[in-house]
Length: 359
Image 1 (tube, helix red, strand yellow):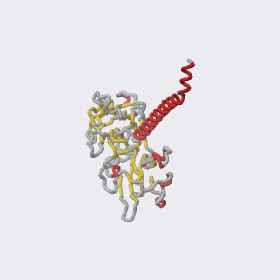
Image 2 (cartoon, rainbow, N blue to C red):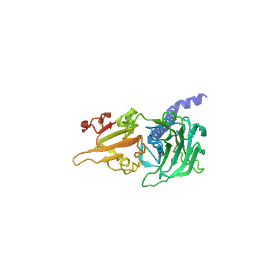
Image 3 (cartoon, rainbow, N blue to C red):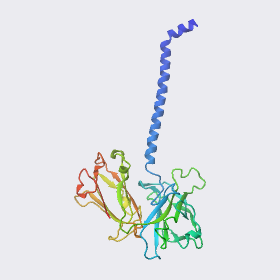
Image 4 (cartoon, rainbow, N blue to C red):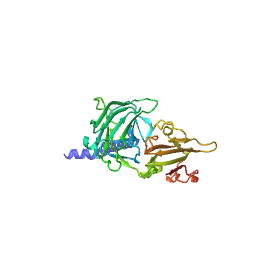
């Protein structure tokens, strides 16, 4: 034993070097592991912030039990209907320029329920009806309490992939004119959109089903009851430097004129919004055009977008929300949110975005 201790004393330097190498190797491996996980976390956050590539103007992700009211003034002609449009898209509203790289197959079901999603019986429905129409305005089914048909399912539907453009499907629910907007708020249509993977459990793992419980409520009048326009990132208390672009949300009820102007030196607007390829704004005359875009005049950098919103108008598909994307051009960077104004005369080299709502 004494001889062994003496040998260890003689070789202590070599032994220390071996232990030091092992320790440093372990620290290096740990550093690599931590770094890899940090990078993975950043990538996941960046990708998820773009949203899932399956969206709607009304329905929400995993929202089968989410109550979503639609506001209308009462009809004087009870033979008319209260139309609620349901659009499905193969992209996220936060980035319409990027769409799903495969067909999205789904089944959509419409069911008469109360505001909590409990199915209703024929006696409760009475003489009320809801016509379900496709994008060509062909009647698919009529939900009612007379026949009765209380639910309808359309299977083998698809948003077909096209490398050149995004895809859209459109359904309209036409609530009968005898709907009482004050007392029938608990008679609704539950819309359930389920993905159909054909038995392939790995398919659509990056998507979520869409749903919502759509009920009618009375708007105070045909005038606006609260249209607003805002930047969602600003509302979420994000800093300007954290954003590569900005998502403007315009939402409300009733009638309003929303005017948006921006300096094209610093901001680009997603042209897919105003060139009639996202929301299918229709081909109305200039006097009734829902969305109008005007490019900068010669010698100017200011572009203009005007939205004639009216949730009481079937011409505008009773739309109550618009999502508009703006991107930084890289020419300049603001230190804070002071580049946004509601005073047109304030537009300058440091103020690039003007938003105005007239109700």
